[in-house]
Length: 211
Ligand code: 5GP
Image (cartoon, rainbow, N blue to C red; front, side, top):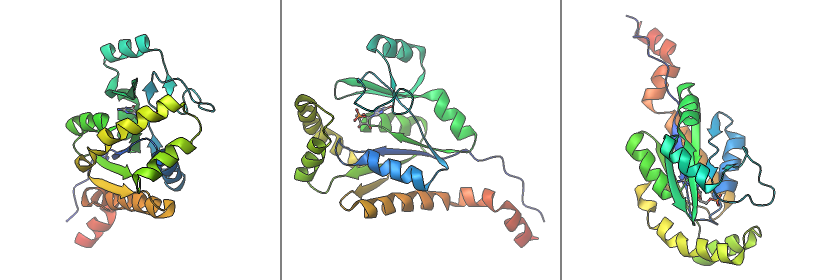
């Protein structure tokens, strides 16, 4: 008896959120180094670039009028206002990568995560917490690329972001970086071991074992 041939499996959509200063981007960049099969979705934003940030690599930096036109055109899978700037994820980019079977990672805020859960309930969401409030403040100030006013706004907004941590599938405390990276990798590995994936990956094996 041969097992039925299964259609190609879409990739998994991972969401990673955190208050500013939790170390989310450093963790995500390290994850992408170890897991090259995951593609990072580059967002659109009205925030001005920080020193060293490049158009198309870190963000698509656009004017607010252009962003608002893009919202009206429906190009975003999700969008939100965060720290007084607009941010959004391109619908077609994400859909194209997932259809190719690639895993896609979105670094977005809790509002965007909530919108994605409604349209893609099979997404996997992770929230990163800092180990303490003083450490969050130290990391935010230590970045050196934001003005005092921006830092204060982000510190103030961190409470709102953290109050939504329970809505996520997983929570990681980023105290020791290596431990937090290990936790993040464990989540990715566990998702890839799900039966839905494994049945496709090991279709021939299962067919042989049933034969
Ligand atoms: P930053 O300005 O520090 O790069 O990002 C500020 C916040 O905006 C972070 O919480 C980040 O995750 C969030 N963010 C970045 N891109 C997007 C996006 O496309 N959508 C949403 N909803 N939030 C985003």
